[in-house]
Image: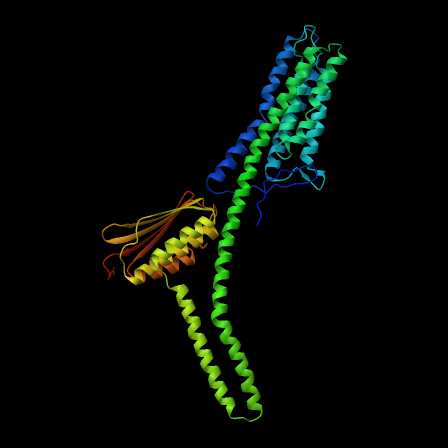
Length: 425
């Protein structure tokens, strides 16, 4: 199985995985990044204050209140669409089959409207060659647009699209007859600011995509661990039963042929079939008994291996105490069932197994941090699951108890067996 690097969507392709409730630190990374990127969109309004400052210092006549009002409304609409683009792009691709998402089209249209209004409504380049409101408006709007699109498009595409910002600024200065080295410097600064904005968003989204790929790999590892165990069981059963069943089939055919001819040897062949069937049954029972028989130390080692294979950090604390065989088997079943539930039904990032002796009982505590919100009580991994009910019955049979409880995103199973019930060393 070859590894695959996290990819970013290009024009015409998409590789986003829908946002999921990821486990442990992964969920924290996604939530933190989402909130941070949501806050990026309103920052556009803050930078428009520089436009207002440049407008206030301009010596040219101010535009009419209606014209300024239209420009302000267009700017607010642009902020809202930039926020919507980030929200949509975080969970879904912004382009599918060479078709842009409607929110992207709306963002690009409003961006064009804001730029045109800024060029038409706002005053030109001041005589002293300082910053003009038009250039700042174009730069802020363009940077915000590229930043919003960075949520779903690769940086190299944005670097090309972002060239429109310095190009428009230079054209504005040329039309005003104020082209100079200052114009080039201003255009270069605005382009770098645009790329910084887009690059910050792109890097943040790349981190989320890597985390999502790691989470997907962890889920695949868990499924592979389960599949490997199933293959092992099927292989053992095939080896034990296959030969005997083949012999039964051959002898049954022979017996049927002899019976049709009235040959008394048919009865002997059927006796052999019965013997083979009985031996096969004993062998199958032996195999099943081997799977059912459990040893606490072996189960702890197996739990460590399965959890690590599933990408879950695991820690086993304590030593296996001297216990009666029945008590060891009961605790081993707790380990097996609880670990299976962690791998199959939770989104745990870590799991801890503690063995302790409080003087009157041996205590096994299994804790994981992968509780899935909304799980009902009947789930196998929940407190009322049928698997845990079966474990309670096993522990009651050896004088023990079982408790299970969820606390936030942590789920704990606590099993106790008395240490004075015929323990063997």
